[in-house]
Image 1 (cartoon, rainbow, N blue to C red):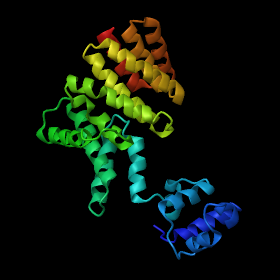
Image 2 (tube, rainbow, N blue to C red):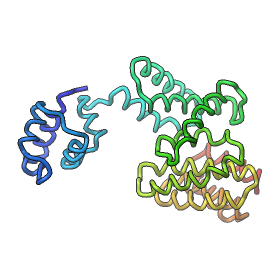
Image 3 (spheres, rainbow, N blue to C red):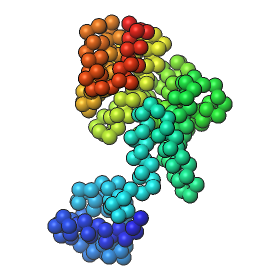
Image 4 (spheres, rainbow, N blue to C red):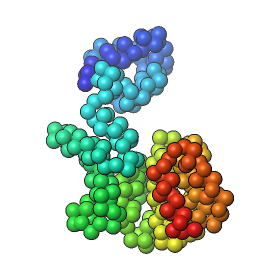
Length: 282
């Protein structure tokens, strides 16, 4: 990691053809920016965000540039987590878990610790099923929930954790926390980055209701996922939601449309799962 981020900022600014005067406006003085770029002072967080906004760069991208255009070990782990947590095979998840364990030997990092907890849960569920009575597994899910239940609002990282342990709650508990889940997601309705997570969490919630024969509750949530899939233009999500909606409404035409979408997009694994669900509930 390059710690001469003032110089890095200056390099980016000048490459974009921006002067110090253009950057500063009436927000900060040119002399202050000059001292930041020389490494004489460290900007406050508020000032740093302002400066990055002026060069149209996110904090994450700036950190990437400071690593000589290479992802840090931490960035690599987080990027892999977004890529691999949706796959069915455990092989890549186990590799990611090993990266987390290795990284945490030398770093204190709460998000990576939480990611490791999530990976342990997902790997275990895929290997032994969602209702495992393994003592370590139960202890881990209880540990996560103990931390989450103290909060009156759940943020993105909390919702990721919740999505992974939701299937291990008693039905009454799921019913009780559903309003809080929906309220937390509503607060993020204009935050596009959270949309795939929102879909995953709501789908898990709808699945619990469906498998407990609470069709109205499943239908209400599935309508939200259908609208969400159209908003973010994910056709695998759209196909899934149409089939699920068709099951709830006993509408064979909707089921057929959903199957056609998954067939056309070569979602063979998901298609197999949904055909089995149709057979079970339709």
